[in-house]
Amino acid sequence: MTIVLSAGTQKLLDQKLKSGEYGSADEVLHAALEALDWAAGGLLDEATLDALDRAEDQIERGEEHDWKDVRQQVLDMFTK
Image (cartoon, one colour):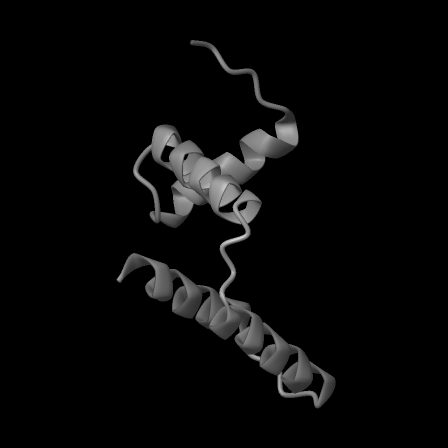
């Protein structure tokens, strides 16, 4: 199968591969498709929704956190 990517999509793919987080384009695509399934399935439980509400409140108070740290925490929740 041949997949043609736009320049923007290719750039995002390259960034993911350079980060070392994924070992191949197939791994990136697989993770993206899983994320789409997860998002489409409405799998946000009450605890996650509450956490998002608390985060929004923190942002409003100026208590922001570095995205890389938050991202890692979220990834850790779904990989354990």
